[in-house]
Length: 117
Image 1 (cartoon, rainbow, N blue to C red):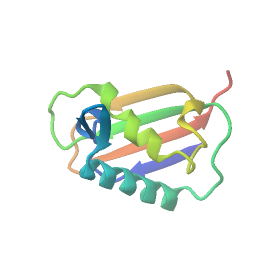
Image 2: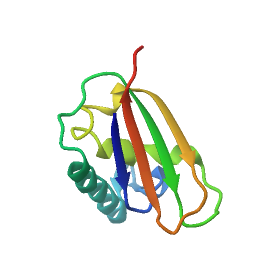
Image 3: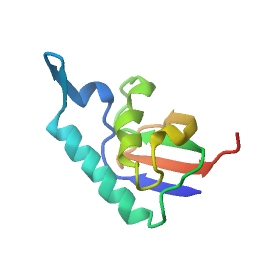
């Protein structure tokens, strides 16, 4: 089991990209967020990337009570952990995302574990 806590404002996929014509670009603040996730994850997990089927449990702690779509927060987060916690996010077979009560210490908590399918 891998437990990672990321200290950064969760960013939704909807707010991470912009499009010009048919080309899609990642916004600079989204790149900063992704880089922060990568650095923090590397500091917390020193093992080899897992090569097995996985389950991921995600807790999102926001700073306010605003209503959010829960499905918008996984993409950048899971892509950030590729080649750190696992080889590819397609190994994830079960994912649970929970929005927690507001907390001044905005963060994302992840628990990554082996799953037998």
